[in-house]
Image (cartoon, rainbow, N blue to C red; front, side, top):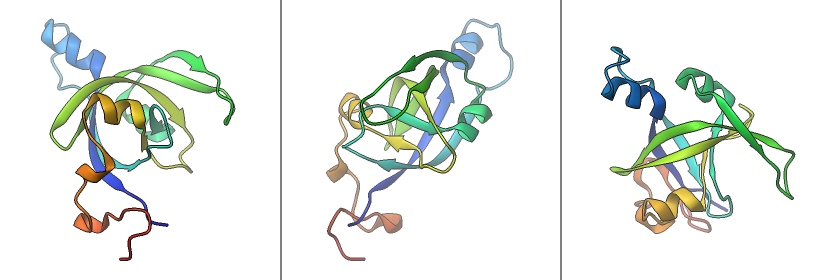
Length: 129
């Protein structure tokens, strides 16, 4: 079974707000990285190392039926394929990929089919390389 990945740009939302208000002179902390596009996931998940690079702060915790409780971090601006939205971040260990789940995909009006096949090695489930 194949997988669909996308290049994403993630920006610390609070940094952007503070810069807009004149309380921050530096550019907002931003990371460009790859993420797994997973319609079986619900939220937006980032590796611990990416969260640290962005300087995000814990704001809560979520409990699910399928994984142990996870820490939720302050919001980010997520840009994917030229579309941007604001999302809270759920932490995952560095051993897992960054994941864009169903809520961000729907909010950004993306679908896995919006990602061109075979561009930069993108594959759809069941598609041969």
